[in-house]
Length: 226
Image 1 (cartoon, rainbow, N blue to C red):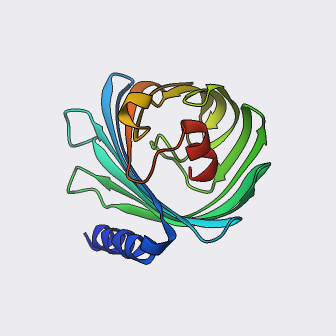
Image 2 (cartoon, one colour; image 1 turned 120 degrees about the horizontal axis):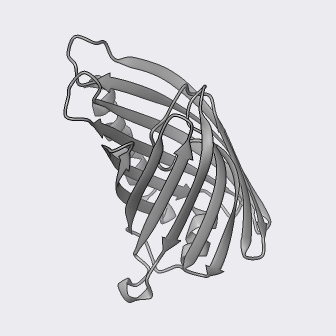
């Protein structure tokens, strides 16, 4: 409970600090099946531009694996502070955060670890080459993981991506995702489909993201803020 209170306080404090900097604020919700077990994802993200080349990000994602039994159901929360340097050719970032794994079984203790991560993107026209590496043991998040891959923007508001992804210390697999940001909603929301396959488990899910900022294309939004 103390960690959750601290996360909420820091998130809203960062929003207040960034008010004059015109931050990008996003909320995402995902649902899918992880080997026929329900997996719910809820994400909060605040991107704070500092100048034309430097920005920071506050990220909170919560993941809930619901199996119908308290013995193997759990909640996982990750809280990050990320920093980026970027230009028209790409972006580099580092981050530090905390991950907490809380089993639904009250007899099992929660686990907590400090996480470091490195992120890099190279922009080549409508193609983005991406690498992300994390020090955590395992994650069920849709947006944070160790991965290497490529994204292609079929248009300014449609993206297809393919990654080689590390789920935990023992399992790696492939991840395909596609996102679409419809113009009819003033570019303030996007929908996505994610397919992940590995030796230990498979996942199929959908994501909806809401943006509380200003009207920009999906390609510009992801390259400037995500």
